[in-house]
Every structure is written in C-alpha cells, then in structure tokens.
Image 1 (cartoon, rainbow, N blue to C red):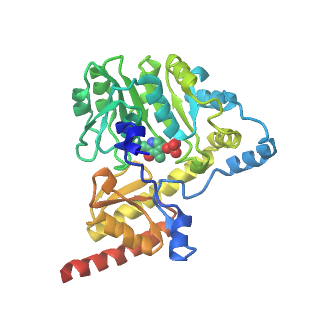
Image 2: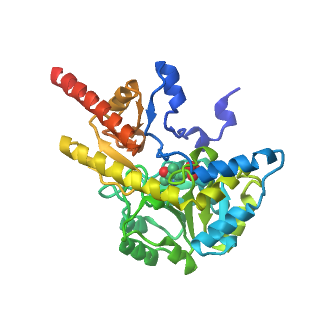
Image 3: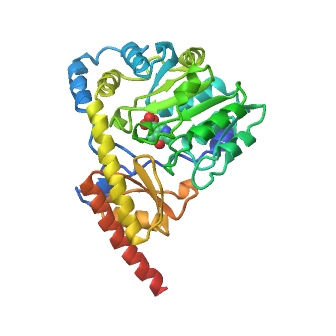
Length: 372
Ligand SMILES: *Cc1c(COP(=O)(O)O)cnc(C)c1O
C-alpha cells in the first residue's frame, strides 16, 4: 500500500490539532495523583449542579435516541437570545458547528479568511474540506479587522472571527466591528466565535446579535464547554439566519447532540447563579495572576477571557518543567508564540500552585541560562 496514492494531498498536509494534556495521562506518566489542569479553559468550579441533576433524571432513558431536532434546547436558546428557534443549530461542541458551517457553505477550492493566530480549528477544518484559506496577522495580539476586511476578495466565501480570541484572550471593539460590517460584502458569511462571551464585562464588546437581527449572514457560535462547565458533554450552538440554519441542518448528522448533553445544557442555561459565580471566580483569579505577574516583571497579554497568555521565555521548556511539577498549561509554539504559555484561570488554590511552580521553573531557567 502506498499511502500517498490513497490519501489526497490536502489531507496529508494537515497537522493534527494538539489538545491540552489530560490529567489522567500526566498522572499515569508521573505516578502522582494531585496534578492540576489549567490548559483547556474549562470551568474550574465544575459543572452546573442543575445540569448534574438533569442528567440523573434522564439517565434511564438512554436506550432511546435523543430528540434529533433538539426541540427544547433550541427553544430555550431562542428565548434566551430573543430570536426564532429556526435560527438555532445545536452541535457536538461548537467545534462541530465550525465543521458544519464549512461543509455547508464552502465548496472545495473556495476561500475563507481568518486571523493568523486565531483558534487553529478554523484553518484545519477549511483545509480538511479541500478549501483554501488566507491568514491575516494579528495586530498587538488582537484581530486587525481593517486588515481582515482588506484581505477579503469578491470570491471570499467565509470569514472567521474569534471574540475574545483564543489563544490571546483579546477582544475587538464595537466601533471596529461596525466599520468591518460596512466593509464586508453581504454575501460573505461571518462566523463569529464567541466561546468566551460570558466572561466579557466590557461595554465596548460588540453586539453581534444586533447585526444578525438586521439580516446579515452571521453565524454566532457559543458553547456550553467554558462558562457553563460542560466541556466533557460536547454541546455548542449557532445563532444565525433561519435560511442558513436550514441549510446547516440538512448537512448535520441527525443525532449529533446526545440525550444527556441536551438535558444538561437545558438545565445549565437556566443556572444563572453558577455562571455568575464562575464569572466572579474568574475575575478574581485573573486579577490575582495579573498582579502577581506584574510584581515579578513577567509580561502577559491583557485578557478578557478565562485564560492568560504569558511570556515565559522558552514556552516549551517552561511547559515541560511545569508538567514535572504536576501543573498542566498549554505551550503556544503551535500558534507561533514560542515564548508564551497559555494558562487557564483556576480556583484560588490552583492559581497559587501555578505561581509557585512557575517561580520554581523560572528560577531554574535563570540559573541555567546564567550557567551557559
Ligand atoms: C474552546 C473553544 C471553542 C469551544 O469548543 P467546543 O467544541 O464548544 O468545546 C470554540 N472556539 C474557541 C475559540 C474556543 O477556544
């Protein structure tokens, strides 16, 4: 067998997405049981207690297929955002909705545009589909909407924006978004990934839903994986025009969101208290870490989300050293930031442990570079 003869070149050229290291894996490798994971922007408080109760109450029903149309969850989301249920698509994480958008609206050879250092899934999915992509550099670690608008051609089918951006945690503002909307053709689909929207308290944060209500072809992506604490269940949703939702629905696998996930998401959506506490813990932790880093003279990118990109010198080496101390963060070389690691804000005790480990690591780094 010759793999080159069997696999198309655009698939062979793909790099696999490197996810955060699972806790179990590290503990297996180190033979320890008390590691912490600050690597995948998960909710450190855990799942919404209401979601856990909801899962227990439907558990005995898993011999049946779930509601393929996700009726109750879509209806609840629609009422939460004040749009029609026909404009809501649910997915196996918002990751699936990124794929669904690409498979629905791009033909092989079509072009999509995205920032160079935005969520890596965008270009991987576009590439896997046999479509083309153009990447626009960030400016000051932030989406440069003017440059992105300039990069759009009449043939550009889709543009991806992440607000807040992952891995930088930065946002673009209302005024830039409004300029962008007036510069972009009404036939270009804007995929607006707002996975961390629940964490943003800034009044300058754009209201993408308003533009959707005006009839622009926007696909707003949100998720239950971050603020709602349901990453393991894989539920995300898209808010879009009913005409676009209808097309995505035709491409979607019939039972893409499972029965437990639908019940949990429905309950979590109603758990304002949990989201509120999550936000508070995050605000406190973010402030604590930023203050501590400033005190130490360590640079970081100001964040509007639940993670922080920190300039540590040799990101990969620092990542490895933290791992050996039972702390999982994320190296950023894959994103073209080799001097950084990305750290998810944890509980107060986790943030303190991270800092101790980082101090230890950087003291060692200082010693080793002094020795060279
Ligand atoms: C975490 C994240 C997602 C969410 O992925 P799910 O598939 O919903 O878990 C989407 N976009 C960005 C930018 C993210 O960081």
